[in-house]
Picture (tube, rainbow, N blue to C red):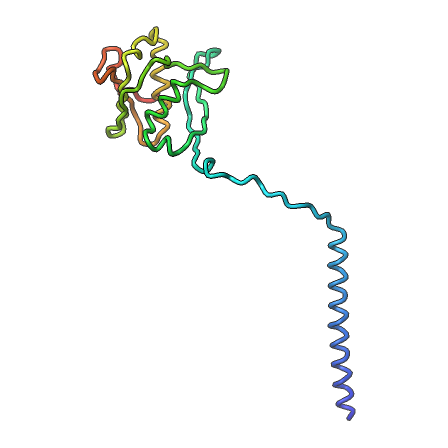
Amino acid sequence: MKKNKTLLLFFIIVILIIIAGYYVIKHLSIKTDENQVISEYTPQEEINEKQLRQTIVSLYFINPETGNITPEARMIDVADLARDPYKQLINLLIDGPKSEKLQKLIPDNVKINNTELKGDCVILDLSEEFLNCGEDTTKNNIINSIVNTLTELTEVNSIKILINGQQNDTFNDIYVRV
């Protein structure tokens, strides 16, 4: 009988310890919750489908203060770039920079007749208005602008410029990024 009383007392003590432990844990967690400042969760702006399809490209324009060709980062739609990347990038150069500190080099009236990638060289066929770009310094800056912009694409290492499908004495070289 004494053994039964001891066993019963043991179970009662264990149950009391469990109840006391539960009470202490619950009481402490309530105190912790009271001390916390609950702030409302504000989700970040969701990325829409158009933003997912955009990429950054570098377009090169002239900085009139320094006379140097300077890159301008631009977000463009990947779908536009995938269709005809070389034509797309040249059209962006013709459109000009977004920054007021930079100036465009290619005149508005220049048309792109064709673009083609042969090996790692882009053959760029432009209209004859491209010949009226001005002095040699301006022509060199235009060439550097085109070459630097197109060679940002990993598959392009050089540029060949044709005028109305023909080689021209002014632009008869294959241009490589310097």
